[in-house]
Every structure is written in C-alpha cells, then in structure tokens.
Length: 568
Ligand code: GLY
Image 1: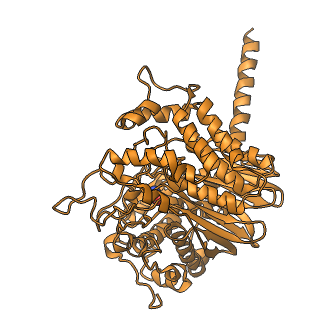
Image 2 (image 1 turned 180 degrees about the horizontal axis):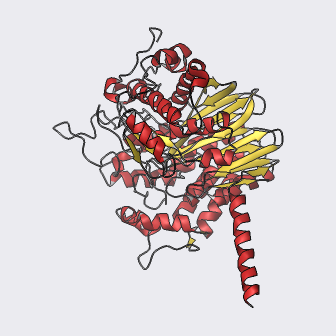
Image 3 (image 1 turned 135 degrees about the horizontal axis):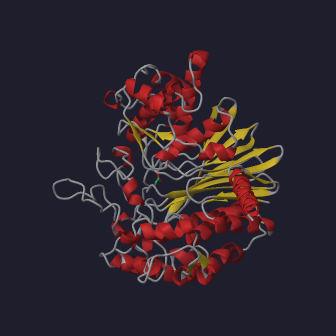
C-alpha cells in the first residue's frame, strides 16, 4: 500500500517536471505562429490562418479578440503600432496611435498657478485621445490581408467571445479583483468589470453584451461602425457628461498612417522598427550602435556576458544618454522635426560614448541631451505573428495604464485610453512612467503623444529572424533591446530570451532597476561601488517573441503574466 502510494507520488512529481520543462521551451510550428497575452486570442489568429488568411488577417482578428479577452490592455478604445515584413521583401509600419482631439491645448492639465492638476491626464475623460485601433486594424487587413477573409470573418470570433462569454483564467480573474477599487469609480466600468456579490474567480463566464454590439457594428459597417453612427453617438454622449472633449469631427478626422520603418543593424543582423511617434525604434537602434562600438573598442578585455557587472554598467550608461536625448528631441514627427538621422548615425553613437567611464557611474545630472547635426500605463500588450509564407507582423497596442482611464463608454462596452498622459504636461514634470518631455512632445490638437512602444523585426539575410516587442511604458525600449541581445549576444532560445530576468534604467530617475533574481548580490555590490543606485522592482515588460530558422517557427511567450504561444 505504502509502496503504491510512493510510486504514485513519484509519478506525479515526474509529470510535473515534464510539464514544467515543456512550459519552459519554445513552442514549435511549421505553418504559422501566434504569441499573445491571451490563449483565446492566440487561437483566433491560428484559426484565421488555417482558414486561408495570412499573418495580417490574423493580426486584425487577434486585435479584435484581445479587445474582449484582455480588458486591461487589449483594446478598441486605444491605439497601437504595427511593424511588418512581407513575404515579397517589402516592409512597412502602421501608426494607429491615438490623436489629441481638437479641443486639446498645451496647458490643459495645469492649474492657474501652472501646477499639474493631479490625475487629470490619467483618470478623467480628458485623458483620452481619439482611439485609433479600429481604423488601423481594418486598414492593414484591407490593404495587406490575403483577400480570403471577409470583415465578418475577422470580427466573428471577437463577437462570439463577447456575446457568449469566455471563461476567465485565474490571472484575469485576479487582475479584475486586484483593480476593483479603480474599476469601481466609473458606474459603467463598475457594472461590467466588478461583481457586487463576491470576487471573480477562475472559470467565471465573462459576458460583454454592449461590446459585442459595438463589434457587430464594426463588422457590418467597417470603420464607420466605430467612428460614425451609434458608436460615435455613444462616445460623444459619454464626453458630453464632462461638457465635451472628443466630438464627431475628432472621430471622423482620425486617421492611421503608414510610415517607413526605422532601420539599423547589429552584428550582422538588420533591424526594422517603429519610428516617431514612437521613440522605441530609434532608441533601440541608437543604443545598439553604441554597444557595437563598445564591443569593437573594448574587445575581449570586457566581460559582456549576460547581466555581468560590465554589461549592466555599459547598458546603464548607454541608456542614460539615450533617454536624455529622447526627452529633448522626440515627439510626433508630423509636428516636430525629430532628428532621426542623428539617432541612426554611427558617428553620433561613437561621440556619445566619449564621456563614459567604464569603471564608474556617470551622474545623470551631468548628462545633457546631445545636439543634432546641423542637417538636422505600464499596461500595454504585444503580439507577434508569422504565417507559412513568411509574412511577419509585430504589434504593440495600448490604452496606456491598465484599464486606461477607467472610463467605459456607456452602452458601448469598451474602456477608453489615457494616452494624453504620454504627452509632456509640463517640462520637467514626469509622466506615469517617470519620463520627461519638452517642447517636442508638448500637447497640440491632432498631435500624437510620444510613445515607447517598439514592435520590432530582426532580419537575417533580409528575412525575418526575430519578431519582438513588449508592454511596459518606458521599459519597453530596454526590454526589446535586452531580448535582441539575449539571442544575438547571449545565444538564448526565444523562450529564455523573453523570460530571463531584466534590468532597466532611463537617465532619470538616476537608478538601475532590476527584477528579483535578475542580478547576483555580488553584482549589485560591485555596481553600487561604481556609484550606481540600484533598486529591485516588480516585473519589467512582458515580451512575446518568435524566432524563425530553417526548421520553422519558434514561439516564445514570456513567463511573466499569462502569455500563450500557439503554432501549427
Ligand atoms: N502608453 C505607453 C507608450 O505608448 O509608451
């Protein structure tokens, strides 16, 4: 009896070990791969590809599905960026970032004394920019979809999930419970996302009838199902409760834009990423240019192994300089002349290295922004998709903070973004990610707030090799950079690359942040001795990546949070 019981226990331990090992491995697919924060949404993308759609069709369908299954960040009330490499070799990015409404003005978040009114750019109706997701997702599908998937087919899975409900995972149930206070502030949000009788629990059926009806209007009327007609009426009515903010013209005038990707290279690999109004692509390329120079200059005398003292010190010094430049020079390039060639220049990268002491921390106070040459929420989500023909799509999408501004459009069932907080409310005043901004990112009507979202594709011999991105506000940029380095410099597989502990720094605050188990005690001690201030913090980013090699597609879902890679 005792032996039988011991054998049973042993078997159980064995199964748990096998399961954990499998969970720690990349997921393989020969015909396609979707990695997103929601198992239902990843499955929707796979189903669309199985039905004859390509990666762009899948991208749009996953975007709508996430709006249902991942209420804190998946969205139709927000916006995003998409970086795409097509099977024919062409590439593009699509900017469907929110735009400031016409009523926006530079000092709108300041009181009469010029002080920032606490919370106004974050938790009020005035925090919302005009949403761009519906316009962007439908535009990409219309222009680059396979032609095999109708608009109704794109929207059907999302409608079904909203109308008939889906079972909450433990993670989603806990996230609702953890945010109950915040979700209870607006009556419509409270009605949908909280329960009076008890806490949410795993397995509860979560039904969203109003959201289903909004999605049906989009399915029937396309863009007009959101920016005109009943949905527009509901948004404008919601805004009238505060005397108006987003109006019919703002909705009608919203436009997503194709933009050229920013391009760089690192150790023989090419990098395609998102340019302004994102700061991410330019900063990642600029920092990798600097790092490549360091490798050239320092060679083998330097220990650049994963999370070594030299490595963390070097990254921190690069980040300090790059984020100082972000503050001064970056904003929406439709409104501000962002010195892109400066950020992409290898000479500039080399010059920026000159005052780095490789044995001692520089104080951020002594680091100013560089000058261009004369010619010149923490809650976001990322998904990566590739199809069997090799079309590769990298999408980061956001409503900024978790659950955006917390305000659900009454009758329409979706939460609005609080992206206006990504503008600089006032020079020297940090936004919710501690990021500063100046003139370049000042508020103007119809302008897009500066973002850190960095949907990226790394190419090997001009073909997609890595598809990467992450949520995490200001930490997105350093997360994407570390993911690239984890693969190219540290030889990790994609699962390890996205899941390994990360560090982050950003000029100001003058501090290195690291995750639990991210740095050895001896490394922390040595970095402190070099003059760095170091603090442990909660998780940094949630990256979802795909690696592509001659065998097929390898999905890496970040072990932080609840991410799912599905291949077929
Ligand atoms: N809302 C975060 C970002 O766009 O950077």
